[in-house]
Amino acid sequence: MENTFEKEIPRIIGKYSSGNKGPLLFVTGGIHGNEPSGVKALITVFKELEKTKPEIKGTIVGIAGNKKALNKNKRYIDEDLNRTWTEENVEKNQPDTHEEREMFEIIEVLKEQSKGDFTKRYFLDCHTTSSASLPYVSVQEVNDNDAWAHKFPTYIIRGFSDIITGDIDHYLSRIGMTGFVFEAGQHTDKTSEENHEGVIWLALKEACDLDLSKISTYPECVDRFVKKNAPPQKTFEIIYRHGLEDSDEFKMEPGYENFQKIKKGELLAKQNGNEVKSEWDAYVFMPLYQAQGNDGFFVVKEV
Image 1 (tube, rainbow, N blue to C red):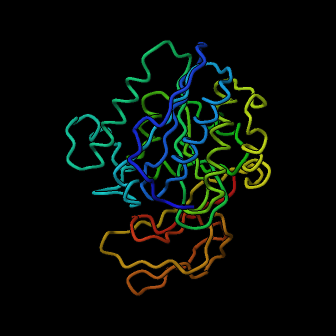
Image 2: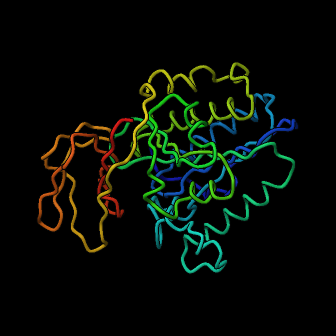
Image 3: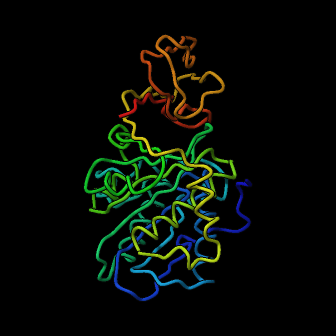
């Protein structure tokens, strides 16, 4: 999957309603600029909606995240946009970095798009991972997020947002929206775009009562995710985060994939010349295989 976009991406990738009262479904892609598949999936979904004009309840809005980083195929410009959404940053109302400017722009778009008589407000934040991965949902256990996440057929991770602060799903949950992060697979894997498209269609079905059979690309657009790529639903919780300082020299041992089983005593990585070994019989989660990032890996257990 090519990462570069030929022209600048608009902030609002698309907006669709058939004029019926219902919820707002706010879908974000490309919060990290090296993760384009959510943006590409949104472009595909809105093309299909405009072509077939199906009835839905409410409105779906698709948003591009870190626009400048997307055009440069870089994770971020000054700092990670998925760590800027702290209460302190949001309240100061004065951007100090490129990513804070993008954050305030997205907040303004959300405020504008939230005007109206919506029955509920949902969000879906689309991401990919640096290592090979099965698709999964990452959910913060607040509001009715967890019950909503369990309507979707894949692995579910609880607790990631409780360890990492300043991510967009923290902010959206804090302002009373219901939703989760969807990690579709590895950054450049073509199945990631398929999975993002599939989960957006399922969110439209669950939130906005879309009859999927009215879509000309159905069932392939959903089946590629649900039947071909997604594992059976299981729920995991994070038990450990291996955090990194910017000055650390960190190298994950090669070949680890998300949700790979690990044994106690197993060599996972080298950090500043020292071996990092597993203290658990569990599963490795989000092993770091890219230059930028402050999370070396996580350890998760099945609930």
